[in-house]
Length: 337
Ligand code: AHG
Ligand code: MN
Ligand code: MN
Image (cartoon, rainbow, N blue to C red):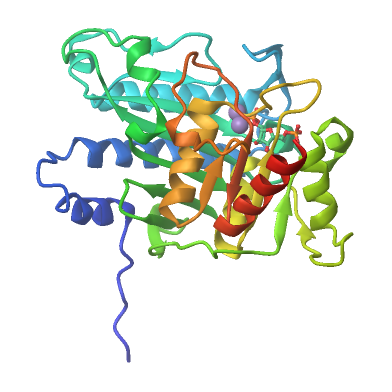
């Protein structure tokens, strides 16, 4: 008879990892744990979504002019609530809120960190039982501890992230994160209600055969992006990749991270600068991509993580995934524009 092997939980893993940071006092560990708790609450609701009255539109639009879904609101409220009570976070920027949210009490003013969050990514897939996610990014505050945070804390370049990750509510629920020491994935074991270590040290293939982009916008892309897509389709007989596009960046990125591929959301004629938001979509994904050995650029040779943000909801074109594929598309854009 073999002994049961106890799975390593998220909590246990980050406590062990904390010993790698000589000055860490456990605040970041507790913060990551709180994110795990909020993720479990959102997961419960996502799982029951077809049963409870939580599907559909909330009846308003957000700062980006997009329809807010009930689950968008629910996820936003849960993350704000859990992070407010954590004590480690003094403020937060969310896709669903126009301005930075400052937690105004003596307890939270002592918080060392700020969080940027996309509480529910892939809103258009909520009502149809397709994978959705949560994306988060954590920075050390710039303003003095004990005061209220402000935009300076939020508008830091991605290189300053101390941790970032996502939760994917898919066929199983996973939490994938980095603190700059590689990328680790945990799978929620519903029987014990814990995220358990399942993907240690994720390294993305240097080159894959998946390309992910909304090709419905083909005519709106620049000539360089169009040429690259023709190449992906094997038109020049040198390639022949497979197209995979879910429309939830978290799910598209996650698949490509594990299998090898490229995820793209370029500028379009209608939307110069693309659709994705720098602070709570592109930066955390870029941090993870680089930590897994991949790349994340704006298609014009600029590393996403080095962009200096000017506004909370700023958008950026994103090309991310396997290193050689990102370099390849950059080459086509450089040649054809
Ligand atoms: P969100 O649901 O947080 O607004 O983000 C949706 C994003 C991203 O997840 C996805 O890849 C992209 O929008 C899909 O956009 P298109 O429908 O234009 O392809
Ligand atoms: Mn999103
Ligand atoms: Mn969202």
